[in-house]
Each structure stands twice: as structure tokens, then as C-alpha cells.
Image: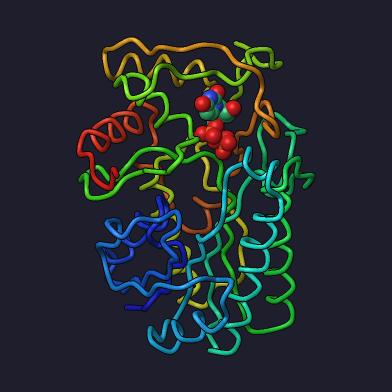
Length: 327
Ligand code: UDP
């Protein structure tokens, strides 16, 4: 059993990782400033309130939790917002991560599982993407994550730090047991917004551009169920605890869904119409991002168990009906 300090553990992906850490016999300790996370999502271990921008908070957390390893989720992650407020992204994501790495070094904690993103690649230059795809981020969010990756790589090279980095594609769904799920304020992600439109909580879903060079003109993304992603993270911790070398992996499904396909699937799962309209493109959106790598399966023995579009929509639909964390 290991104690894992989970930065951003009150957020969407972090809370699901805590659930599976606990199920695997580990002890998750959440470190969160609760600015975008939810106290109600901390259900699987203790929490420490603190901010990555305050090194004293980090030192206190390491001293209190005495972790064996860290999972680092805490970051700002909205592509659109990052194009308007790059300062927030560079400060919170890059400076915050540097503070974390320095606090880990002071506490002699050398094992890190890190949330990165395929946004570091920018426009796809190949039909599907593998971990060696050229990195040319086209928005400040992706640029900040690339800087974080490079920083971690340099710290690993110069010290005993070992990191497993996951470059996420898109994530959807919720805990099938309904304890936790996705809730952002404001919500910007496609799957919850589509279901809000179905439920009448918003007038319609706006499709951000239908003139991309894709089959139906809308953007294509690789959607992974949050439980499968959380499972990859627990396997990443176990890999490190067993002495594994640093890794960078794509937890993706290898299948892409267009915005229109997601909307059509939501209509089928809920058996209701989806009010929709076409809007302009959103700044910073690449037309297609789909993983083409099997390394996470090969290295970690990871298998997809929940990642059909139908299950992601069904679990999210069931989750939103609980009304949990709604303010
Ligand atoms: N999208 C959309 N309307 C919305 C929100 C998202 O058409 O109201 C599109 C967006 O342009 C992208 C896809 O849905 O192509 C997934 O966007 P999301 O924000 O969920 O994740 P991202 O791909 O930015 O990580």
C-alpha cells in the first residue's frame, strides 16, 4: 500500500483516480485549492487544502501526508480560456508544477504520475498520433503543458525523480456507481453540454464549426471513459512503485468521434432530440486528435473496459440526474 498525494484530487479526473487508488489498496490524500474542484468529490481519503502557487502549502502537505508518490492533476485546462488569459495558464500550470517538483525534491518524494495532453502536439500531422508525433502546440494551454513535460523530463534527468506522463485525449463519462462525476463551472466540455441541452438545462448545443476537413465537417476527438483513464493512473503508480523507468504514454482508444456523432449518440442513448445549432469555430481547436498508440496496454497491461460512447453518455446521463455538487 502506498500513500499518494493527489493534486487536483477534488476535480473530475483526480476524484475518479482517488476512487480507484483506494480500491487498489492505496491511500489517496487530496491536495486541492477547491477553486475548480468540489469538496463533495473528496470521498476516498483525507484532503489538505492548499495552493500550488504557495510553496509553504506544499511543504506542509508533504510533511502531513508523508506520501510515497504524487499524482499531479491540478491545472487549468480550457483551450478557449487559455487563448484569452495565457497568464493564468503559465502561472498556474508551469509555475505551480515547478513549485510541486521542488517540494517533492525537498521531501525526497521521487515518484510522479503526471497529467499531460495531446494539445502539446497542435495540428495532427498523421492520421492517428503516437507519442513521437512532433510537438507544436497551437494554444497557450498546450504550450503550458509542453513546458511542464519538458521541466519534468529535465528534473528526471538530473535527479532520482521518475515520472509516468499520460498525454490525455478527451475524457468523458462518470463513476458507474454514481458517487462522483463531471461538473465544471462554467462547463465547456462537449459531452456534459450535449446532455444539458437534451435535459433542457440549456437551450441548445452549439457545434463549433462544421467546415473542417473531416467527413461531416465537425471536429473529431478520441473520447476515453474517465474510469479507464483513472485505471491507467493507478497502473502508473504501481509501475513506479515496482521501480519502473520513466514513461510517456497515450491513454486513448484509437477511435475518433465527430461532434455530430457524439450528438447523434446522445439522442440515441437518451431517446430524446438534441437541440443544436452551428456556430463559428472555437479558437485553438485542431480538426482531429486521435491516439494511435498501444504502449499503455503493452507497458502497463491496461485494457479498455468502459470506453464505448454509449457507456460514457449513459454514465454521464445517470450522474447528472443525481444532481450531486450542483450549486
Ligand atoms: N465542442 C462543440 N461545442 C461545445 C463544446 C465543444 O462543438 O459547446 C467541440 C470542440 O470544438 C471540440 C470537441 O467538441 O472539437 C470537444 O471539445 P471539448 O471542449 O469537450 O474538449 P477538448 O477537445 O477541447 O479537449
